[in-house]
Structure formats: structure tokens, C-alpha cells
Amino acid sequence: RETIPVTGAGAGQAADEAEMKQPAPAEQEQVSEGVQWAIDLAVAAYLEAQHHLTLDEADGATEALKELRGLMFPLGKAGGEVSAQAGIIAEALAGVPTELEAQRAAFGTVSDAMLAMLAVAPPTETGEAKLFDAYCPMVDQHWLQAGEDIRNPYDPGMLECGNIEDEIKPLAPAGGQR
Image 1 (cartoon, rainbow, N blue to C red):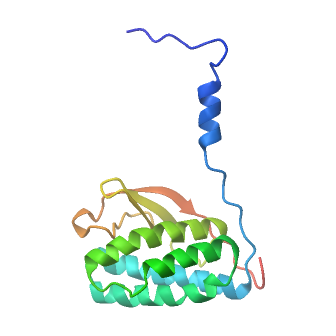
Image 2: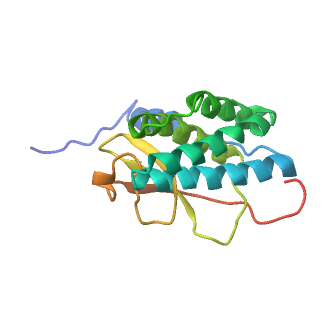
């Protein structure tokens, strides 16, 4: 079969429509030093939960998820998208699940909300491992992880299943507001 190029009126329409469907980059929100501190602590608690889930450690994941949920109260007062995503995380972690299956189900919602939050209010650069948005097509879930080596929290049997979708660009360390 021969491919025939499309020309004439409407030839660029498909390309124009594809461009229009691309989501606009999230606009960063100004947050106070206290909110930034809570975001950084939330990232640390999230990464701790992700680590425990990769090891099938329900007790460790429970503690980290409790810590993460506790940080949603100050973030819920931040306003804007940060507050909206904090509400989603708090709701997903209400009555923090203690069984691995329930933790992983909640973790999917939490991951989506954390990634949305960090798109508008990135964490502070710590000098430690870079943060990434990772994705597993087998479970159709995203997660946030430190470093580029895939550590899938959704199924330890598929620990290395997934790929890096994007780097989470941190803020440069600074005192005061951003």
C-alpha cells in the first residue's frame, strides 16, 4: 500500500486539534515557607510509603501513610491547587488502610494527587536523589520515586516494571517565600 499525503483545506486540522488537546503546563503557585516545608515533609513521607510498599511491608507503609495524611491539614489551608490535592490525599487516606491491597489502591489516588500538587508547588532541592514521575502500564498507575531505577510499589512481583515519565524539577533552596 502506498501512503498518500493529505493536502488542501483541513490538512493541518488534525495537527491543530492534537496541539489543542495537549494540557497546558501547570502554573506554579506561590506558597509560604511553612507550606513549602509541609510539601517537603509530605514528599519524604510519600517516598517512605513507596519504599515500604515495594517491600510488601504493610506496617511500615501504614506509619508512613499516617504521617503523610497528617501533613494534609496544613496543606489543606494553603489555597489553590495545593489545597485541592491535599483534600484528595486526605480523603484517600481516611482511616489509613493497614492491608497491602487497600494501601496500594489508596496509593494510586495519592500518587496522582501528589504529582498534581508538585506540578504547581515543587519540592525544595535537597541535593539527594532526583525525583521522578514513574508509570507502570501493567497496572496503569503512576507514582513518584527517588532515582531512576524503577521500584514499582504496586506489585513487588513486578518491581522493575515501568518507566520514567518525567523528572520533578525541584526549587532551588531559598530562605523565605517563593
